[in-house]
Amino acid sequence: MTQEPDTPPRKIDRRSALGLSALALAALPLRAGADTLPAPETIPLWPSVPPGGGGIALSPETIDAGAGSGAPDRHLSSIARPELTVFRPANPDGSAILIAPGGGYSLEAIDLEGVEPALHFARSGSTTSVLTYRLPHEGWKNAPSVPLQDGARAMRLIRALGPGRFGIAPNRVGILGFSAGGHLAALLATKFANPIYPQVDDSDNTDARPSFAALLYPVITMRPPFAHEATCEKLLGPNAPPGLRAVWSAESFVKADTPPCFLCAAADDPNVSVDNTLMMFASLRRAKVTAEMHIFEKGGHGFGLRAPDALPISAWPDLFRRWGLDRGYFRQT
Figure (cartoon, helix red, strand yellow):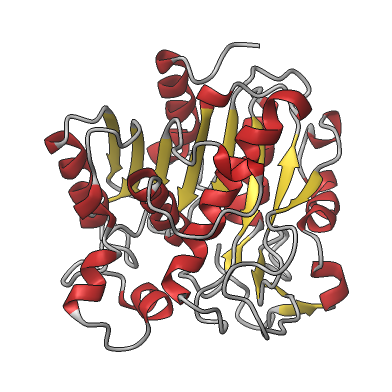
């Protein structure tokens, strides 16, 4: 969304950013029908200090980039304690969606690409969880692995806790990622078997492989000429060598056991080249992995659920749900 030119982003007192559930509750009255959903719950990802976090002191920050626009657009950064914020549907269908917001690994667009899609798909029957993941450039050891560590841990926690606590079927737990969150989702879909952190507890005995992955205007490659260089720099540091870029290019790691994928992007995306989506789809086809791709003429980048109704791209949530219904991930409630 476009910010009013004379309205600076508003920094929210850090105490209000300590839990995404507080942010989500603040946003609930702004969305029609939100009051029919139970209040969201917060689940910490790690029982103590996250991997590679010794000696790091971060104070969570939230910037309201939508101040004056009439629509909340909060950006979260300095994430010391990653967590899940779970939205229970009124009529659960047994499915679950882990949602990874984007923000170029510099911040996380919590409203646009977190709370809003979580509420939308919760109303359709899915238990949705917004992931606040650590940002790699904020002092963590093994920095490029940090978002993937959080994504894998989140998937395992949902599977471990879901059946008893939320009525989730473990074989119907997917991930939805936007932009850099789409890169995280693609990495989890292709590198789920990699041992990227030491086992913490029994939850880590569960499978980190998503049942399905939905990639919305995703960053996929770290290789030129189609890499989004700002995202690459935040993930890998400045002047990353070709070998390091290759390790974090998701299109290179698609295999036969990569989960089915739903992909959506706009051909006129001015930020992340649509070639990212096209090359991921090509890799999925080569590996004979089930995939559905929608490339729309117009839509730009970062549209979330806010694309104008007049644009065909605004139909992507319904297309995604129909795809999931057809494959049995979702159920009519």
